[in-house]
Image 1: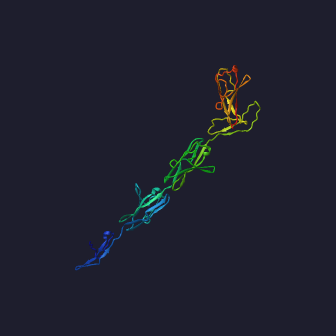
Image 2: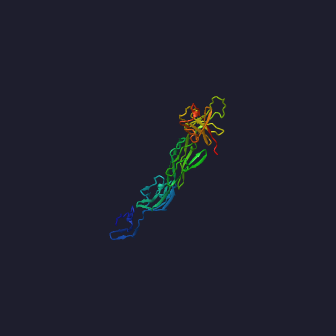
Image 3: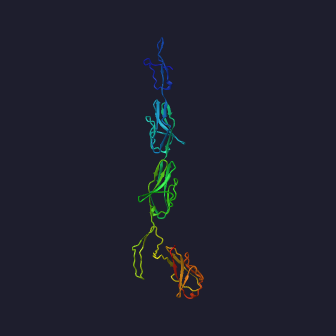
Length: 383
């Protein structure tokens, strides 16, 4: 290649050197008689696409930690652009300094710092640098982010249930790694209790079904409940659930513990019942110092004639074991004892299991007129 230059300025200018400009140059001058040459000048144009390198091929961090993937760049001419690429099984994305949780990725700080890593950050990373000659990149570096503590959440923080009803305290868990241990804690009156699914009043709960179901809630089930989940990274807990159980067993109160009444007069012994849910039955029981049973029949007296049938219902309430039952029949100043072994025709019942008396077509010479039956029961303590 030959290029003419003005006599006044014989130097040779290259305004934008490229690799094609490398070579040997000679300055020549001539007049009307001869041509003179300078010594050869060797011109070498240096430079290349950026040389990019990473410090480590592997990085292992725990969820939530920061990590810096170190990158160094050598470039002539100087770098015009720096970025990273992340590759996973199904995608490749570019990472620049404007991305969230990213620091660095610039001409002066090409290393990539990820803030508050999570498992989604795991993948293969490559550092890229551009200059006027092209783009260079590093080898891949593999980032592995271990999972986090579970994320434990509950649907409600206040739950109210009626006494005796089933209730479910909902809990949901997101965990990476997925293997978790689930348990619940109950706090009541300053006492903390760990709950397990072995409790007969609690349906089993697992990592897949962590909700807590309480069967037939009672007053003592009320309190503060917390759902816990443990994985390889650590332990996490839910917000508190305040469980209120409305109602309970009836509350009975009496105004007095002692009364005096004249024989033959009426008396009312006061009793007050407060119950939620509403009570379904009220009954009184008389204490018996001698241990005798309480006997009730559906009739005080019964009128019949011989040859007819009748049924007299009898029920027994006793704190001791009833060993024998018999009926005493008083007729015309005569007494007849009737029990399970009686030979009177048509007699059934009069047993411990069936104390009622069945009279079917009774035949007895002494029962030709109107008859009155009275019952008597015998009880003795069990040995």
